[in-house]
Length: 108
Picture 1 (cartoon, rainbow, N blue to C red):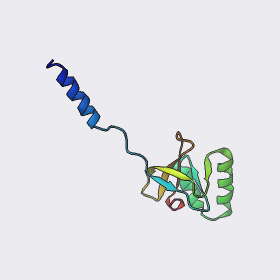
Picture 2 (cartoon, helix red, strand yellow):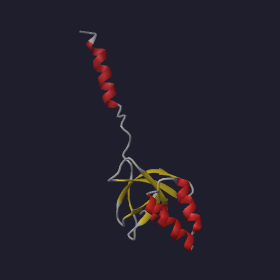
Picture 3 (cartoon, rainbow, N blue to C red):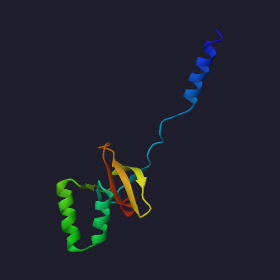
């Protein structure tokens, strides 16, 4: 009977140590909607274009190719990673396998 105690103790110890990762924090997209891209460098390139006509053309191309997506206003997303330059990587509730980079100001 003494041999059962180490197994029970180990089971209790494993049960006490919650090894599941903490849930990803939830944020909402700003009311007007926002865009986000799979690759960080594409997001940065678009931001450097600013409000020029080239920005609109490049964004339209990236959206049509599936490189970037439109996030609907008030859509709930999960924060995956924060970047020190003002980008944030998010995951949509509907598609858990893909994460998207967007400027931090696109979320509230």
